[in-house]
Amino acid sequence: MANSVNISIEAPIENQIQEITYDGQEIYQAPLSMSENLARLAQKIDFSKTEDEFCNIKKEGESTLEIKSEDESKEPGYQSSLWPWDSVRNKLRNALTEVCVLADVLSIAKEKRYMVLDPIQAEPIDSRPMVQVYGRKKALGAAGAVLLAGVERLRASETMRMTRNMPDFHIDLLRLRQNWRLKKVSNTIVGDLSYRTAGSKFSQTGVFEVTKAPEEQIAQAMSMNASGPAPSALRVTVPPELQGVAFISVLCQKEQEDVVTATLSSSALNCPGTLPGDGAELHWQQKIRSSTECSFLQGAVCSPRG
Image 1 (spheres, rainbow, N blue to C red):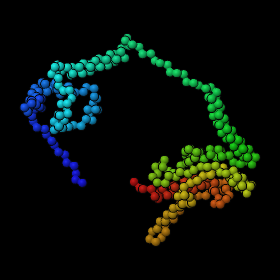
Image 2 (cartoon, one colour):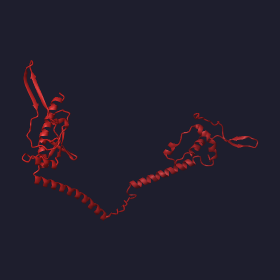
Image 3 (cartoon, rainbow, N blue to C red):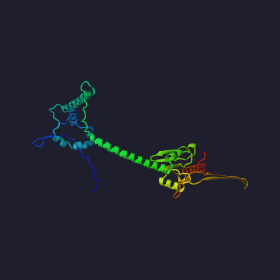
């Protein structure tokens, strides 16, 4: 199917026929003068339309206006008996009236001496005290149940610690805080064993996690080693990169002759017994010290030099 093509049609430039006599003679209507044509166009202005409606009107060319001239001739057009600007005057007068009314409304709202606006009291909310009391009672009951559960748990833990002479978690945590930086993130206690505060640029974060050792595991360790020192209630989890033992060996030679040999490694630390089980847990002091020395030795070798 061929594409549509726009065709422009222009009306012939001639006056409209006013009357045709019986003998076939055509009497043409006299053309409008400039003032009459201006008055005719002014009568077509609709002052009631908004700016958006004017923007939505499709812009048509002069050819379209000439095509619709026959339809416009059927409508009541220009009336020579009336004053030419009568419709424009009436519309402007109506617009002036609306503007004056708007100005009066603004004056009344601005000047307090003309009118005082009293606020309308809102209708009181239908409050049901029994419903509120029941809701608060239910909320307090839920909060009380949580607190009672925590109290019972703390009481049972304290009773077990006193009867079995088990180590106190908070005492061990206090000892840990005396030498290491700790902070609480959500429900987890984490610490930092890196040397970044001393200026180290080692990329390893050195963050370790502190948790409470299970009471059953502590009781089992105490039963297996009754005569030895009691195990700690803390459990420390260090990054895998800092686990184990690290050392630095330095060898100075002069013409195939050993001058001096030095080895820097982590030293042993006498701490209480370990927790039993698969892969027995070291004491937190020994584990943190070993990880700190690993971090120091790795940072001394791997850190970039300025």
